[in-house]
Image 1 (cartoon, one colour):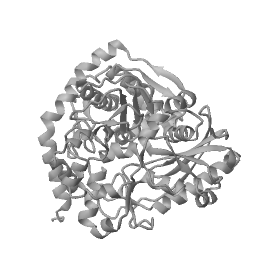
Image 2 (cartoon, one colour):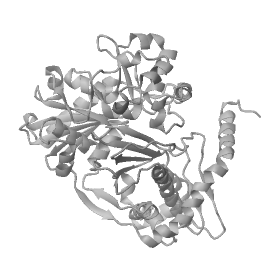
Image 3 (cartoon, helix red, strand yellow):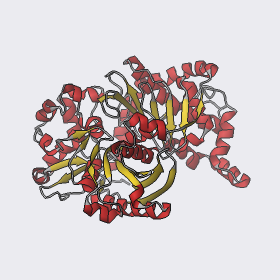
Image 4 (cartoon, one colour):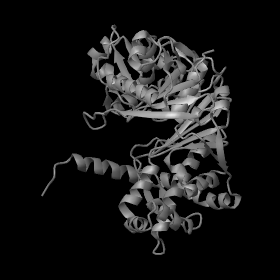
Length: 523
């Protein structure tokens, strides 16, 4: 077992690299972040430089060590998490041969349709429905079709977290987390889905993926001399296999048991749950074999627009609330919340559909759009604000209902992110879905999750569950209100009914507006 008293987690997010140092009880000593740039060469494209990730990591690690006062030799182990699916191509000399395709890059939309058209059994992971342009086969196929020279020169095609692990240890490994969640890797079915990749004409891509697919928290190797010198850490520091940021963040929330859910909130909602058995069905992603905890299965859902809709309303339609907040010296959301608290569940018949930027699950429909209906002359800004919060909660419950119909029953939801500051909103989630909503001490769950994996890889903890028992601490739980839950069910049903009735009109409008944007201005 490593003797150092502290563990280091490294989180490579979309906007930058963030490093945290924790003690063995999960108490954070310091966080340090370094931003990096995202480039958008064309509409729908998003690229980053792996060199920027590394430089950010070096700066953040050194900064965290300096600020904390922790001696480098006191770091027992390190691990990483990163955005996924962010694809890096390397040549036979381990050099990056093109900018990385960031997770949000959707240039491979045509290739995603080809993946869907294969009808391969591996597509159970996306509910046998539409395939995302973000996922690994879509992006790999784009490289082969659109940049064949890059594809042919690539000896290694890896996700961001695996590139980072390689830079730290010199070892090529793949995280089972990103391989399963974004590459259709399934240990129950023998590993990589060769029939899917062969149907796409990219069967040789499997040879470009790391052969060694490891569980999160497994010791990969030791920090190399070169990496140690750059980072300011001792050579030989243990490095553990990491994974995708949202999923490592779920570990940082203590999501280690079947039935438990992680609800990671922000501008969008990411929903991840654990199951003892595999559940497959249209409308959610998974169940991913061993994707987070060995021997368990993970299910996934998500809402594209959540907190972003709340901010949209505040910025565009709440000038009076903003002015009042300035006079009282409080946050505008405090004023809006006071208004919403006076409104009964259901907002007096007002329904908001949260598909402002499309729907991720259960419909996986990029052409879907938001809607507000049931308006009357008696509705106020407080009604609309409350209806927005409720509509987001209805969307989460729609995902939960879809999972329940396919055998997975969500239990307790552990929540992280900015929206957790709203007691009203969190109580709504508990009431609408009739599940307890819990909050942990440490809100920086991806960094904490990486530190937990570092502890497992360094031998500080025997497994992820033990790391969670020691490092994750629940501070409080909101219990659902039975009467409110019963009142909400009528409105959830109306929310669910809206999309099938509006789908064709939404699609026509989205296509019309897209065509209008491309057309030259007349006059």
